[in-house]
Amino acid sequence: MLPRLTPLALKERASMVFLEKGNLDVLDGSFVLVDATGVRTHIPVGGVACIMLEPGIRVTHAAVTLASRAGTLLTWVGEAGVRLYASGQPGGARSDKLLYQAALALDEEARARVVRKMFAVRFGEEPPSRRSVDQLRGIEGTRVREMYKLLAKQYRVPWSGRKYDHREWGSGDLPNRCLSAATACLHGLCEAAILAAGYAPAIGFLHTGKPRSFVYDIADLYKFDMVVPEAFRVAGQNAAEPERAVRLACRDRFRESKLLKRIIPDIEEVLSAGGIPMPQAPADAIGPAFADEEGLGDDGHRS
Image (cartoon, rainbow, N blue to C red; front, side):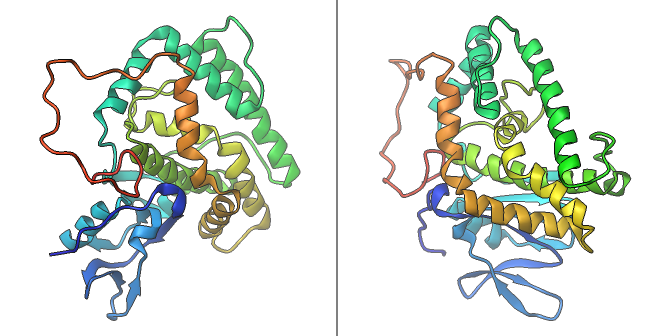
């Protein structure tokens, strides 16, 4: 039986690690990756926000259990982390926050206020007044395309637009592959933060209809500050392993910018712009049979 663990808050962790080609297990009480020759690599499971499992990984029940208790998100991804196949859920355990998020998304005026706040955070200025969500989406799209062009020119990278087939990794050109690898890193980190804060990745405001709609909403707040410049920089260097170089560059950028300390407060700030209170439990609802112990983790971590 594993000892009781208390998850660390997200702001105290490193961002992520990518693992491939080995067996992930718990041996002698340690979370380890064992390669084909039997060599063990110890993984600090409680000290990272997200572990991205690439092709060639096998995971034991004990490893999944320990990751869950440590509050660390496991995601099963394709080559270079670009395609998400499945993910664990070490957070999202707050019904009040889930109901609050849903109430904001279902109220058209509240949703519009949240989208406007996202626009302001992303571009550093208030959006034009009296614009619908669709109109703001159009304005955003125009700005994004121009920002891609400017960064491509800055790093001297040939650019013909954001074009790729998510079903076929090799279908995109080098800049698009670098961008896909970079955004995959950011999406994994944002999903871990959303779950740790107690919210649902699927309930988005600008994006909708996808299992990670809110992940895309939150990731867009940081994309052009954090990962897009790194992707173009690596693409301009013609690195031998560009996807790996992008992941390392993003990891360093996340650490230098202390992004993990910002995401959850930014989520709360954006949602509070909706202007509706956190819903209260019905008076006749049955509360918990016993109080949870106070831990070091975030609101969404299971205790």
